[in-house]
Length: 187
Image (cartoon, rainbow, N blue to C red; front, side, top):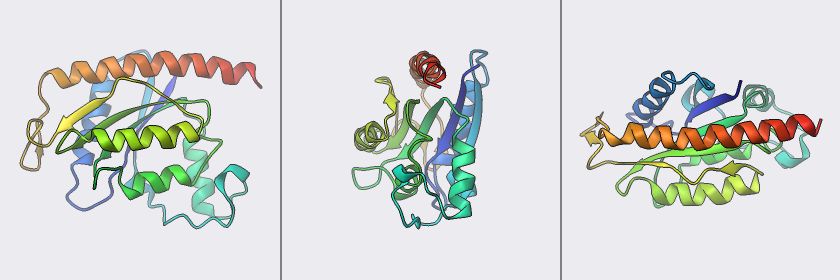
């Protein structure tokens, strides 16, 4: 069975990401084609990248990095829930990605973003980052508008957003299964 981590990327106070991440996770629980787990970067509590060597070397010296590695390694795919800050992804998510390398490789990912324009520029920037990490990102994404999918701070997604999410998850699980098979054959 494919294992998928839904990662809440925002760590700031009064963030919208927690509600969005929980919505993604709750919607995923209606499916029987994968196992989903919710990971909140605020709870993970990674400091700013403090490893002396690049992650691609795989020589982790910090216990928090080794714990993050153990957390991420078993998953076959990821849904990154990201806000858009200043036309890009937020620092906490970028930092979490930068801590590891091989743990992300040959795995699939999808995006659920939110912002004034649905967070689409954050996703475009993340697509370049995950490609460098050897991840396969799916083309479908969920873009939540602060104007249409929120009432103030309250998250109230439009009805079609769940269909968009399921379309993205369909693609994600297809790619995750193919990559899982590829990783198994390579061992």
